[in-house]
Amino acid sequence: MKGKCKLAPIDDRWFWYSGCTTPLRSSRKDHKDIDQLLTQISRLNASDKNLDDKVGALIENVDHHIEEEEREIFQFAEENCSEQQLDELARQIEEQKRIFDQGLAA
Image 1 (cartoon, rainbow, N blue to C red):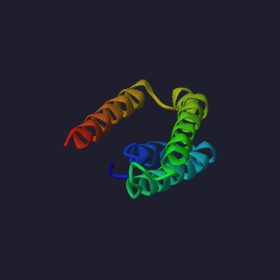
Image 2: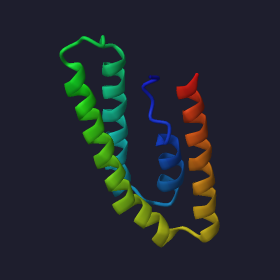
Image 3: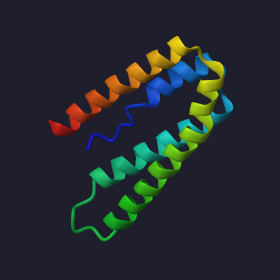
Image 4: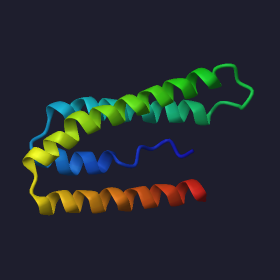
């Protein structure tokens, strides 16, 4: 695991520019928390007694983050961005997912 949340730059670039600061503050904290958990997990051995707890916390944080983005940030984008901006955001997210998946496969 690399320990980096690959979608954070997209959030920052698009939503700070659009003026969406309140939901994004929470999202940035989520990204930081997830990055910290990934770093902690990457340093553990498979036999470490804390591994299950850390992975459980990671899953919980990621699930919460996704729900929050779907509810708040994506809703903001739909209400405040043009169709062209939304298409570009979708393209960038897909590109970042492709890059992330390639990194996992390496």
